[in-house]
Amino acid sequence: MSVLDRTVAFTAALRKAGVPVSSAETVDASRALGAVGLLDRGALHAAFAATMCKRPTHRATFDMLFDLYFPPRIGAGLSVDDHGDDGGGRPEGGDAQQRGEVTDLDPDMLREAMRGDLLAALLDGDEEALRRLARDAVTALGSTPGGAGQRSWFMYRVMRALSPDTLIADLLAAMLGGATTGGLAERVARQTITERIRSFEEMVAAEVRRRLAEERGVDAVAKTAVKPLADQVDFLRASQRDLVELRRQVYPLARRLATRLTARRRLGRSGRLDFRRTVRASLATGGVPLETYHRPHKPHKPELVVLCDVSGSVASFAHFTLLLTHALREQFAKVRAFAFIDTTDEVTRFLRGGDLGDMMARIAGEADLVWLDGHSDYGHAFEVFAQRYPDAVGPKTSLLVLGDARNNYRATASGVFRKLCAQARHSYWLNPEPRTYWGSGDSATRAYADLVDEMVECRNVEQLQAFIERLLPS
Image 1 (cartoon, helix red, strand yellow):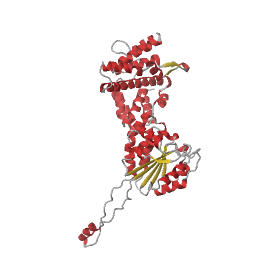
Image 2 (spheres, one colour; image 1 turned 45 degrees about the vertical axis):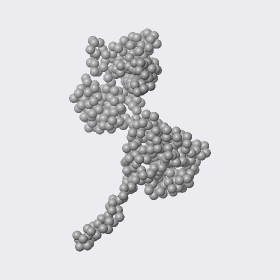
Image 3 (cartoon, rainbow, N blue to C red; image 1 turned 90 degrees about the vertical axis):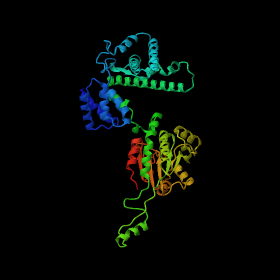
Image 4 (spheres, one colour; image 1 turned 180 degrees about the vertical axis):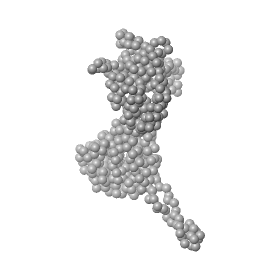
């Protein structure tokens, strides 16, 4: 594969991963390649990032794919930056080759030797030493023979053998140097050690991906190794780290959603007639009011009612719904949140804190959400909501329902839900299931979809953003 073909394949992989790269940017990248050349990999990386990476959230994906398509070295051999020599008259891969000779020794001796090297590198914070050690450790400890003459590479084998977490006590003792434990110095040292260990784990993971790409092909590894972008993470499969990133993205979206749902007058309509200004202006035209003047509208912040399904089938989505509801509290004049499984209870009082885990724990422990057996029952939940909280939905209210509409083949109470939607100014339903699953099995989407203004598929932040952009102010 030529360098130009590899560049084109790299841009194609970026597009598949969700990073937008236009044809013009591909041409710019090719021109940058001609300008900086291949000998300085760091300059090439910076040039490609400047021409193809437009958002900070895309940088991690860009860096990972760049390392796959333009690896720093081949196997345990030469680095592109070293040009075949490390300044000492031997290939930079000599350390790895020496490690290859050491692998003939007792595995326990090899592991302990590498742990000693890791302890020293973590203590010094030497990134280059950590990178060399990650490369050598993957070579010596991270592979097993595979089929068809290939080898399989595993990050967990390296991390299990080296166990960097078990070195924390020794690292703390060395860093503190006899200082008193439990104070600020220890907290700073622990944070530093944690960051260095995490950096080493990322280096090992990058080395494993590079070796796998050599064995199986870059395209095959790129499909499985690259994680979805933050705005494409499925709510139903979001990890704790993903939820932290979601929190950062949801708050600006909440402001935009509030703006879209704000009640506005149609174009050309004004407020009440300002009689005094109109008469005063008519004096200039012989008392004939050729132009009328109107009072400005008072700014109006809408009211919001959120109905959230927090059953086990959408547990991860429930985290997102509470996160979104918490963010919306600051944007609306009045926000009331209601959670349900097979009955409904108001949970607005639990949203006053800032910790999402604490909110979920309090809702699970204190809210009255189970009526019969703890399985989703949308029909009964809507009936209880209408009976207990008849004044919750009014002509100034936007009703937002979040759930998968999996009703376990129970009554839908569509008549009650129709009245709720008729009372509200707007009614929308965000469904975390793919649209192709709607109406299958125990899904009651067909009973509810025609009753709301719009039921939309909302499995990630990208789809939520698209839904907000479609809303037209009324």
